[in-house]
Length: 163
Image 1 (cartoon, rainbow, N blue to C red):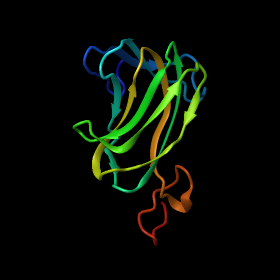
Image 2: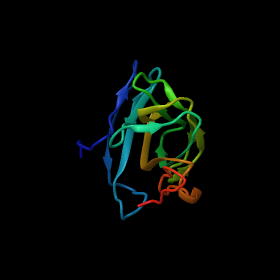
Image 3: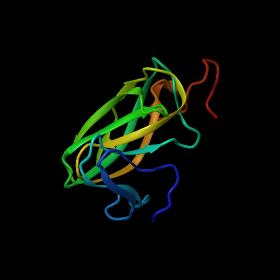
């Protein structure tokens, strides 16, 4: 499957690779597709998978955000960096680096504060080594949610209730 919404591949410098949807070894049989990133040539700086979500990823300076995604690798032993960036590639949320060395699905959920406000930022996963990485269930939520429940409704005002 070559056509899927909201994700694209950026190859900078000498970096080479491709991405596609994959149905092999899913995280969960109920959602049998994952996004596979194949890095074939190490380049500087790297290969990146950005997504703007449906309407952009809005972040506010000083607020904390919880990143959640599942990943697994094959012949990949390098960093996988998660970031929220503006249109110029400048981080709006402190990037988080992960070392993936396992072919089994692993989850990640580190909180990270926003360093600047941007209503139209985009979420980026950057692969820093050759190999294959599969991604599933990628999300970014504000830490300040209804009753501080993870991945719950966003609290918009003290008197509002989620719909």
